[in-house]
Image (cartoon, rainbow, N blue to C red; front, side, top):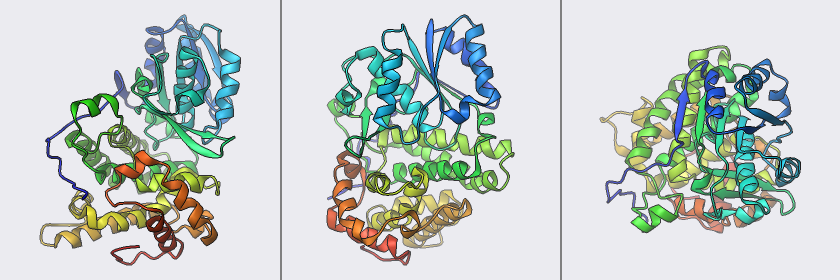
Length: 415
């Protein structure tokens, strides 16, 4: 039987060696890179590469005496072919650190290249948990969106475009040396991307707060990345949810609001710190195969699933959803625990709606004829399935998809 009790009273997180947060703090980048590298590979995408902010960061690192190579062809949903191309260009060139300046896929590319350039082989050699045989190159992350949390996580998600499936490298060696989080870099983030990444961060906070506490053994703490929710991850989730509640609507309505940008970016950092230990759960497990069928942004994909995943999990973590209701200011002790939980879930849905995220699966291209395939493939994300408080099966996922397709957000007790 699933238990939501942290019997050990455990508190545990993995984290970068240093985290620097604040408007304008990208000025620390040259000093950070100079301390770890003689020849840095800076990774970004085509849009970011054209910005004056990127040009200034590259120039500042060069002015610090570091040789800089740039790879500016990072693609969304990081295809394996992207990694193969970059490795072919830079293997054997003396690269001794990678810097990812961009969104989650850019930072995951920087992590993947740090692993392959240091250890050789094909990135496929490292899919899975603790498959990296030795240290990666030092990694510096500079996020330009407020959502993925990739700046602080020890995971790189890769779309294997030959196998048509999302895979991941999950290893403590991927933990960045430094994360430099500057909300000013999100001011030019397009509205749609702002909304999608914020929906992703919100889903991270919900899934981390309602993940299973696994009460790990010392051996499991040393050999597993995802060891369950605990006191420290809950602390990050609580702070992140409060900031999202205050800033999410503002950042979409007024993109130039730096205070709102800062709140959402700090919330995304909090979410990254939490999921680095808890992992994500059903919404992300199910969204993976949906990504192979739909070109909907990842954040909108998990956001569309979240209302139905929350209802599926509600019987198994009612107390946690009630606490979410209190954290979001929509529930109080005069209500029953279930009423508080309903209020918390409804507020999360309202927050998604405020940023224009779709709230049903039909809107993201899912069709009934896809249900069986999605359900079967979602069960292959074993680590995420095991994180989920509600027991998942192909039948349960298919039924959940049917609820989501019908936009049925009544208070059903089983899909």
